Image 1: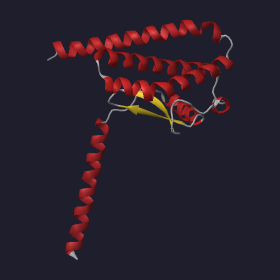
Image 2: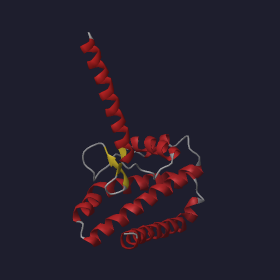
Image 3: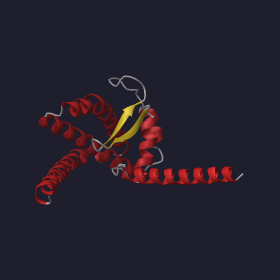
Image 4: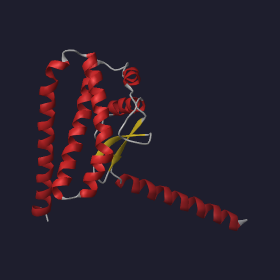
Length: 187
C-alpha cells in the first residue's frame, strides 16, 4: 500500500514538473503580435470563406494565409461568402483590416526581395511559391469588399497604399539598423 502511494505521489510530482517545463518552454516560443484581438476574430471568419487558414512562421517572423485545399494557383471564389463573413463589421473596421492585410502583403514581398538579394534561395522560394500567392489573392478580395462598402475609399486608396509602403520600408530599414547596431556596438 505504501508503495502505491509513493508511485502515485511520484507520478503527480513528475506530471506537475512536466507541465511546469512545458509552460516555461511555451513562453519562449515566439508568437505573432501582428493582429489585434478584433483583427484575429475577423481574420478567422474571413479566411474560412475561401477555405483558407492562417498561421505564423517564427523562423521567418511572418504571418500568412494558406489554402486548405490542394493547389495554390486557383483559389475558391469566395466573394459572396466573404461578404457574409464581413456583415457584422462597420466600414472603418473593414478598411483598417484591408490596409492591415495589404501591409502584411508588402512586408512579405519586401522580406522575399531581401532573401533574394541575400541569396537565401530556400526562404525566397518558400515565400514566392507558397506564402505570397494566397496572400495576394486574399488581400485583393478583402480590398474589393472595402471598396464596395465605401465609395469614398476609392479616391484615397492609392495615397493610403503609398503611405503604407513607405511605413513598411521605414520599419524594415529601422529593424536592419537595430540589428547591425546590436551586433556591432553592443557586443
